[in-house]
Length: 367
Figure (tube, rainbow, N blue to C red):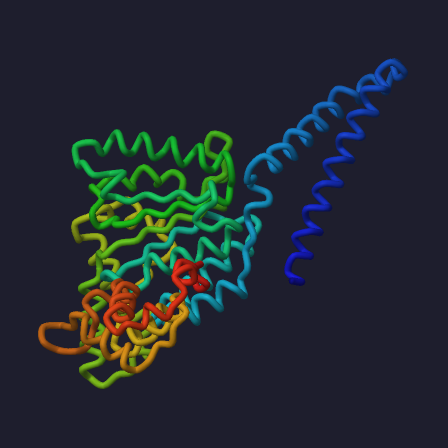
C-alpha cells in the first residue's frame, strides 16, 4: 500500500511542473502587447521556444512512455533477483551484476555495455536477460525502448547480410535517437549469418557522437549456444576431479571460451566485435545439475500456487534427459521444460482440480 506514495509524488510533481509551464506560456502571450522595448523583446523568442519545448515534452510523457521516466534502475533489486532466481550460475551472477551496475551508475560511460551470454539451452541466459531489462526499464520487456531480435526470424538468409546490416543500423540509430538508454537483445546468435553484427561496430566503440547521437549509454545483449561445448567439458572435468562447482572462476575458461566463440559457426565467427575487443564480457552459463533443476521445480510450483513436494520433484527429474552419455550429471534441457513438466504432474496426479485456474495464469515470480 505504501509503495504507491512515491509514484503519486512523482505524478503530482510532473503535473505541477506542466501546469507551471502552461502558466508561464499564458503570461508570456498576454505580455506581448505590453512588452515592446529593448531588452525584453530580445528575450521573448528564446523563452517562447523553451516553453514550447517543455510543453511538447510533457505532452509526450502524458500520451505515451517517454525516455526520461522510462528508466528506473535498482541495483539492490538486480542483485537480489540474480542471486535468488538464477540458479547454478555463480559466474554469470557476479559478472552481470557488476557490469550492469558499473554502466548504469556512470553518467558518462566511455562506451556502450556489450554482454554476450553463452551456454546450451535451458541454463538461464534468456531469463538473466529478462532480469536485467526488468531492473532497468519500468515496463521491462514491454517498454518501447526494449528491442528484441530473434536471428531465425529477423536474419534468416545468408544472402541478405548486406540488407540486414543496413536495416539494423537504421533501427539502432532511430532507437537511440528516441532514448539513449535503449536496450537491444539478440537471441540465437549462433544461427545468425556471419557479418550481420559487424553493422554494430561503429556504435559500440568510444565515439562520443555519431551523426549527433551518443550510443555510449545503450546496452547490447547477445544470447547464443556458441562456446557451450567448451563450458560443459570444463565443468565435467572439474566435477570428475572432485572440485566444487563454486570453485570455478571466470578466468578458468575465459580464453578458451573466446576462441570457441570466434571460430564456431554463427554471428561471431571471425567477427569484428571480437577482434576489435568491443564486447565488454563473454559470460559463461554452466550446465545445470540435479540440485539446480529441483530449485527450478520449486519456482515453477510457486508460480502455480502449489507446494513442490519431493514426489513432484522426483517425478519431474525422471522425466528429463540427463548426460553426458548415460551419466546423470547435467540436464540436457536445463530448466527449459520444467514448467510444462510440473503442469503435467499436476494433471497426472489430479492436483490440478484443487487449484484455482485463474491463479495459475498469474506469475508472481515473473520479471
